Image (spheres, rainbow, N blue to C red):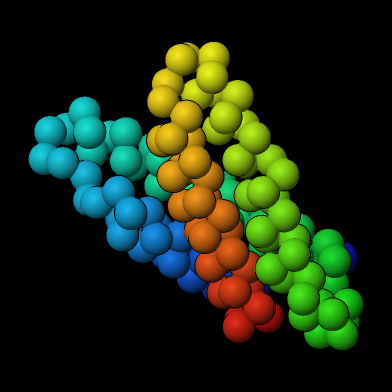
Amino acid sequence: MGPVNWIAVLAAWLVAAAVGVAFYGRAATPLKSRLRHAVAALLLLLTAAMMGHMFARVGAATLEAKPWLYPMMSGGLALAFVGPALFIAYARRDFDQRAAWKDYGVWVLTYLAMGAVFWMLG
């Protein structure tokens, strides 16, 4: 396992946050809303750190030889884990499934963007 690229982790976190702001907007003024966004930002940092760890486990030599692993692995996480988790959570709470599709798309784009950052800074 190679070392985690912490610069890429932070950059991927910022790019993911920018995607979120582009789709959902900035935190509203009330403190409660800002606290929820702060928790979301910390969880997004955890996601970026784990993605960095995943790419470090694969190794720089493999990723250099097979650059398609960046979108395949990052997008695959969103397609196979995050999206289904959203649908399960939305179904259990009887939320509108159209919202789940929108959120699914946002997360796929977010994970692909993070994968692109790791590829560019790899």
